[in-house]
Amino acid sequence: MPGGPYVTSLGHAGLRIENDHVRVLADPWFAERGAFLASWFPFPDNSHVRTPSLQDVDVVSISHEHLDHLDLDLVAALPEHVPVVVPRYPSTILERRLRGTGHERVVVLDAWERYPLSDHEDWMTVIPEVCPMTHDAAVLFHVGGRVVLHCNDARISLAQVRRAMVETGRGVDFMAVQMSGASWHPVVYEYEGGDRARIEEVKRVGKFKAVTRLVRSVAPGMVVPYAGPPCFLDDDLFEHNPRLHTPGDGTGPDGGGEGIFPGQDQAVAWLRDRLPDQPSTYLLPGDVYDAATGQVSRDPQWTGFRLDAPPTERRAYLEAYAARRRGAIQEVWRNHPVPADDDTLAQDFRRHFEHLGRLSSYFLARAGLTVRFEVLGPGGGTWDAHIGPDRMEVDLDGTAQTVDYRIRVEGRWLAGVVAGRIRWEELLLSLRFSARREPDLYNDYLVGLLKHADLEALRAIEAYELRRSHGDLITVRDGDRAVRIGRYCPHGTEDLSETGVVRDGVLRCLGHNFEFDLTTGECLNARCDPLEIERATVPV
View: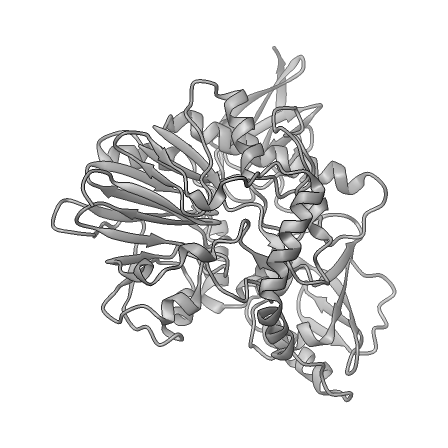
């Protein structure tokens, strides 16, 4: 293919990057069964892009193990000589899942290590998030003298993108950014009145602002938002669609629309409003961007299709899409049958949590809470997991007088987790449960223990947090006073000179929306170490 390089959207976060001597797939996702227990599906339907020639590539890049980025069926069908390149994380779960498909050629890259793509000075490297609590990475491609920065779900820092430009010796020609949510909160939480809408707005706008700051610092030749929204085709989840992606032009202070899954059109509208001199667009599956000329070729598949279609038109599209996937969804249900009406599930639950309790005393001490599981259907019951501070205890009679978290879930979905067939994040991201927490504070150590459930991953987080340095201070302004605070967020160590936003005595880190009281340093909305505060303040 002369010229280029060309970047083709595969739908969701997937890209194909190619010119006349290299062809790469990055985070392709076409799975007929969707992801996360057949809950998420690419929007719009990208099945027409998966042609026999799609897998005629030199390299496949996978950024992390979330199944909307990791298409195991596609990996299993790759020719055995094609390498699958992944970042190195503290846990080897990603590599094990890939090799579990039968594909053995898996290449693991350290951060900033270059992997050659051809004999023409084409290469790629990986840029993992700084904090090991999250296993996500951006991928940097240098192809045909042009630079593609594929951010995936990673929250990379301004310092990392500056290094990326030093590594390539030029600016970024094409930057793909995640501007949609990837969370079960607040979607499945039992909030009253307008609380859910308020939380959704905070998360949506926080994400938009964080990406805007990153794009402003990079000033790429073209920025493209992607990976959202997914759609929900199972009958049990279908009504999430209108609530999660509502019409809006993206330009207002609330980001336009509602929900944590804004559309690509809304994300582009936000960027064009805030960064009017920055070229931006969205790509639908099959659309092609020429990084040499800046031209976009639209796939005729989408003639007449509108991302901003009115609700009735969008619903009709989704209903037809759901009908095409009904058989695959039913297969997932069959693979997760109702448990036996005995104590098998309860005993599996006990063994699973007792195993978690042996993995990390550090996480137990920092989690320090009781989680009640209301398990519905045969074999279920009300079970309490007392997680820390010094041990793990499981009460299958559910006698705790007070609980911090309540999770209501069908036994058929929980059974796969406690038996080790699926991972906790697959269940949580499936939205196939409901939850409530009192007080309403996010507990990163509970979520970290569940989602990693891996000794090496937990040890890496503990070591990272214990070696964090203190004493590097910056000044932020709150009204008529200046406050000296620690430069780095106590949660993910984002540089608060880049990601900190102050309003009414509260600093919010846009990295993960953790909020800190600027008088006490206390984290207001999550279980987290306090922000370092220099007690003396001076007038502005």
